[in-house]
Image (cartoon, rainbow, N blue to C red):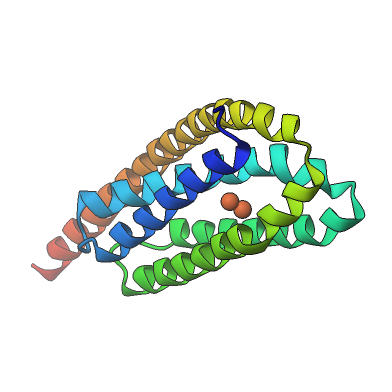
Amino acid sequence: MPETIYDVLRESHENQRSLCRKLLRSKSRTQERQDLFTALRIELAAHAAAEERYLYVPILMHDMGLMVSRHALAEHHEVDEIVEEMQKTDISDRGWIAKARTLSKKVHHHLREEEKGFFQVSGKILSGAQKNQTGEAVSEGFRAHAQGARRKIARANRIDGAVNGRRRSSSLRRRSTTRIAER
Ligand SMILES: [Fe+2]
Ligand SMILES: [Fe+2]
């Protein structure tokens, strides 16, 4: 049987739950925490983009789908905002893990709402053929968006690295000047 859009989305939901769990269990100041955060950002970005394009936009034009899609898009936006805040916070900062907990709660809440209600509403609107055809399209869309998100994150990390490198060298300069002044 071909995969439907829901099979593909639910599989990604499980991946998001697992990444959230591992992230919260990871140790501070480790590469593992950094890598898990990167993986979660990619999964969330690719998932939201594919889901919006193949599920929420098509049902937005139906009366029954309007509220559901509005609600889901608003929650995707909230998740994006928490991720952005986490990116602006030093990962070794104590506040960072508190934000990660908020993100995990928000993600879990959103996935539950989708699986227990939004998917059922959209299932009534999308035709059988659409659901099956969209399953393949979503998988393709997922891969494309994940690749795009990966490239964006790699670029952002390079910029962060360069900025942090500059910060480090200027703070080293400051420290050595202070030491000279202390002598
Ligand atoms: Fe969603
Ligand atoms: Fe979803």
